[in-house]
Amino acid sequence: MQSESSHYDFVVIGAGIAGASVAAELAADADVLLLEAESQPGYHSTGRSAAMYVPAYGPPAIRALTRASGPFFQSPPDGFSETPLLHQRNILMIAREDQRDATAEFIADAGGDVALQMVEGDGLAAVQPLLRSGYATHGVIDSSGSEIDVNALHRGFLRLMKSRGGRLVTGRPVATLRRAAGIWHISAGDREFRTPVIINAAGAWADEIGRMAGAEVIGLVPKRRTAVMIAAPPDIDSDRMPMTIDMEEGFYLKPESGQFLVSPANEDPMPPCDVQPDELDVAICLDRIERAFDMPISRPQSKWAGLRSFVADKTPVAGFSDVVDGFFWLAGQGGYGIQTSPALARVAACLAQRMALPSDIVAEGVNVDMLVPARLQSGVPVSDYLV
Ligand SMILES: Cc1cc2nc3c(=O)[nH]c(=O)nc-3n(C[C@H](O)[C@H](O)[C@H](O)COP(=O)(O)OP(=O)(O)OC[C@H]3O[C@@H](n4cnc5c(N)ncnc54)[C@H](O)[C@@H]3O)c2cc1C
Image (cartoon, rainbow, N blue to C red):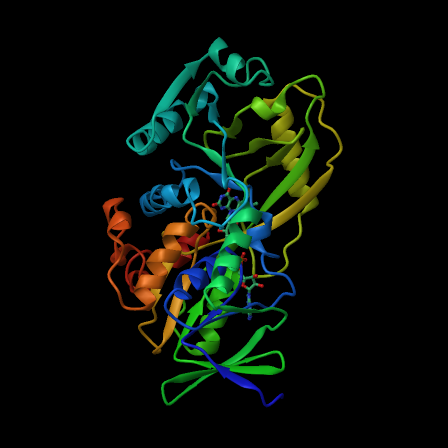
């Protein structure tokens, strides 16, 4: 092993959106190292998302964090990004007659947070002209959705971190963690780094990093989601169409520069890995799209899969371990880690520095108890969730 070893106030493990954003926040007041296993940051979940900001999506804590992130997306700090981070994109939730109960549930759940507009029968065709006649009987339009420029957001956080004196080291997978006399010794590749506080932002690998540290297991379950790009019909203006989602999330279709990103919205549990799309999922996806939409389905132009990692209550974990000192969890962002990243990073940076949460985020309904790892030790049986 090389003799060089460096000391930091915080070492953040994982340079996806979670690690990059919290490292940028922490670097305002502290010496920060952001440590990434891959040669490029953003190679895993962050680089594989559907890039949507949907304030009506997810459990209450997610919706609160998403709302609290809105002002950052609308006006990021000077120099953060040369291009806007958000581009407005309506969301259309579609439903068959047998999904009326699901529609009522969705409206009861999300209707308090965002303005929703119900459309019935022919009104649907006006909003989504590609819908197959007779497939859906009604829909709900949510005009609070946007597309996120994920690359600009991720690069913006990395740039902000560096401008504040933080350091990014890539291509160094953390292999062992050892704590002695109040200091973590982190061996990563041929290097050793030291810090009193580790921030575990390792995405699907967060429980593995926790095990290395001797921390509690949070019961993280990485779930594969598959995405496929197909050509949009040439004679339509697809870019003006809403992102169209099955009311029970059986599939979605999102316009993207003359193509459609389609997904069967699958959630297949699997170990953390460089996940690849499964051909069966691709076939299921195209079948569901063909049933709902009246258009020629071309051969996929590209396809990929990514992991969405959840704990039992589908709410992120942000807080210090109760088992080992100086070990901070930032994990379990599931399918919402991009849209919640600005607010969640501020929350995590405050908690890691043992400061009170920012008042604007508390005002949206976020509190410490909904995020701390201790909530997972008593309550929801994780085994039920895995079935
Ligand atoms: C198909 C799909 C669609 C999605 N759509 C959306 C969406 O529309 N909106 C939204 O908000 N979210 C969406 N998500 C979810 C979002 O992508 C994730 O919540 C988010 O990217 C998680 O970020 P992360 O930084 O925690 O994880 P990651 O991006 O996976 O980063 C974790 C990093 O930790 C590193 N790491 C792991 N182990 C080690 C180690 N031992 N040493 C050093 N580094 C390590 C990994 O290499 C990785 O780079 C989607 C996800 C998928 C898969």
